[in-house]
Length: 246
Image 1: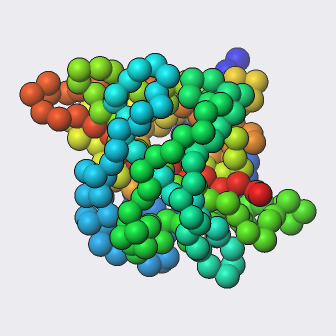
Image 2: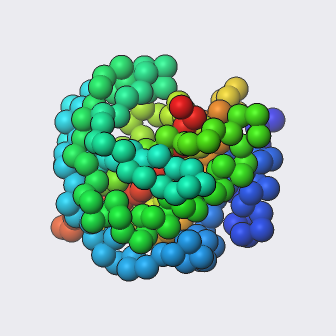
């Protein structure tokens, strides 16, 4: 019998416990806002508007033009967070059978957004949480952090947040935070264990709703988004942050 598709409790007190026990957690917007304000969150509206200035992802093997993005890499340690020189993003085909195996260069996250207090709060919170959950024997002094600003559009073609399907990213930890949903339905996040048994599902519906994933233990994916009103633009904006031991 498969597990019912029920998200873990959203209480702040349960976030770390959910990740440790289930390998994933769903945090609702009020919880995330509280965590991020503690880390210095300010000026969310300016941060969110930067998703209006992303570039088309020209590496989509399915020929799709529905994904826009920017990318940046950072080093995170207890000494602070430092941006690395701009570099390509790479995943092997073992982790991304659709677009993997290719060195992909994307537009860089702008300096203003990389240094923005909202971005810095997200990076600080993610580093502190994921570092604390990593066993001492496996915890690096410095984490390699990658940041992706994604906009998935839908209308003339179906918008696929994860066109590769259920997957792992080939990292240690993943944070996916909703920035905005405009005129779309669906986009359900689903989580499975490594034997492909369903563990849970939920929808990132409000700005700052977030999913936390232990990439070694679970797979994740998101169903296609659908336009509600065909006369209006329709899109889903998310920030994805990954941490990997180097």
